[in-house]
View 1: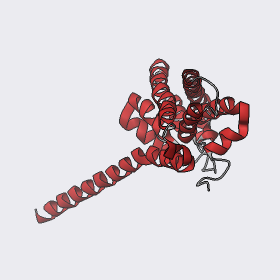
View 2 (view 1 turned 135 degrees about the horizontal axis):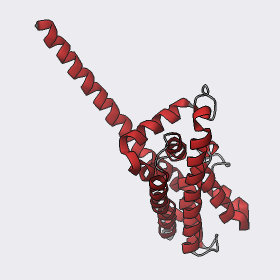
View 3 (view 1 turned 90 degrees about the vertical axis):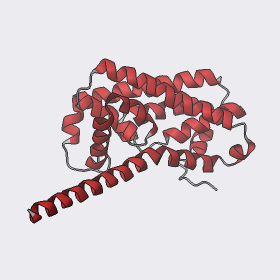
View 4 (view 1 turned 90 degrees about the horizontal axis):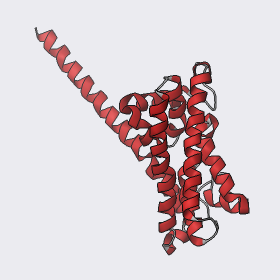
Amino acid sequence: MSFLPSWLDPEVILRGMGGWALAVLCLIIFAECGLLVGFFLPGDSLLFVAGLFVATGTIQTPLWLVCVLVTVCAFVGNVCGYWIGAKAGPALFNKPNSKLFKQEHVAKTHEFFEKYGARAVIMARFVPIVRTFITATAGVGRMDARKFFTYSAIGALFWASGVTVLGYFLGEVSFIEKNIDAMAVLIVLISVIPIVIEVVKARREKKQAAKLANEDTQIIKRL
């Protein structure tokens, strides 16, 4: 039984496309990395399952070629996302909240970018939602294009090829092959860990700041 709705289940998506599986995979990776409406797409789990399918022969394309294609699509997606942000971002994000473009997503991405700078482009690859919106945010903020494209290429290689290769080698483990749905969910949960860590850290810092402010207030009152 699948843990995911069929339209987000990576196994259902790739098996259902038959000989078009690789093309659909590339299209989804491009959309998630470059098109703002692609933030809900299961990029991590799709890459993992694609690697597993290459290992089992379901996708009859050499691993190296799959890695090259998904890496290029991830990079080109970022380039498109950057220019979308540079050209249309300010007008788009200044609109009231909508079902697709919530200010909360943009705000969190902007904080992530401000905190980690250029290396955020690499780190964001492994964080769902953030990896979609950070490209447009970089464009809106007019981040140096050469620097952005350089870090995007590095991030695309580590994320797209890395997760695919991981799926390829772990796909040889019979338990994982028989529990693809569970592995897909696990990949998604692992990818969310950076967000959880940042939220917990931010709350601790906020509490500490509030405590120090309260202590300062008490000292002033005593004086």
